[in-house]
Image 1 (cartoon, helix red, strand yellow):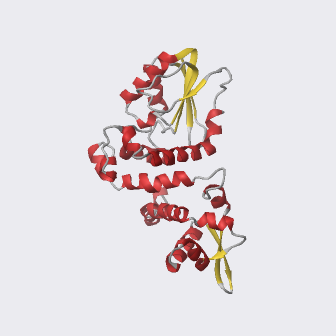
Image 2 (cartoon, rainbow, N blue to C red; image 1 turned 120 degrees about the vertical axis):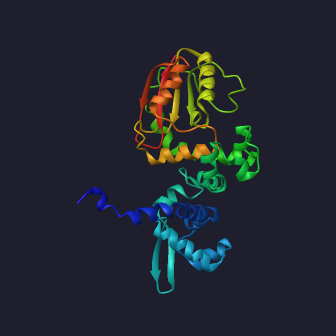
Image 3 (tube, one colour; image 1 turned 135 degrees about the horizontal axis):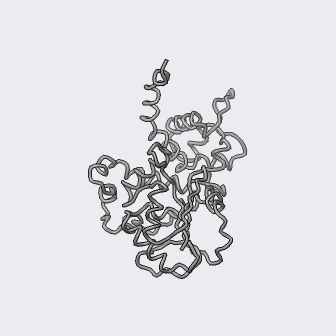
Length: 299
């Protein structure tokens, strides 16, 4: 029997088809405060009690809670009075606002911004352009202006980045021995217009993937000019396989760059070419096996 005959094609299809339903269930439970309430409670709660405290319908909350149980985001205990729900360890760690590892703000950015942009994915593929104008009625001529439609949204976006960094930061910083660099600059802000201070090492964490190749080379050249002799640049990105086989998470992120920004996710070779074009040398690539990888170039 061939390997293709072993595959349950309908099951795979249904799983893919229902992917966005899964996301919205998790987003909705976070937004309503389900996980926060259960963390603060002294024990499991019934669906009626949760609905009353969170101001929702009883029937809607019961279905939401049951779906969260199916997704392993909640546990359930059947008693004579009915079903009582509690957080799983995953939810306590990552879905409650008070946890040091909370991904709440990142999930809310996905729900309120990314999710709406993806409604126009077909248009993005046709046009080859981001879809902020269609999704929000905001001109996307200035990418920064489109990404941050308000100060509140910019703050939410930054909270989301910090949430991810709390999980992945240690892996990429430990990928190389950076002890030789004494003055380190974590690049942010409007770096195309603002001056870049002199430093030994520049960290570009999830920056180049926002931009087309020409903008990336422009920025790297500007950094190279400011960089001290013997210094370098550390790119923190999620890397595509050279043979286009994945990882699927990175391929999804690349599609997100299509609907949200001007750039794309790249292979190690593509990033190495950008660094070489800006006169960085001794380029090293380290795949961490986690969400983000690291590339180091030296001046």
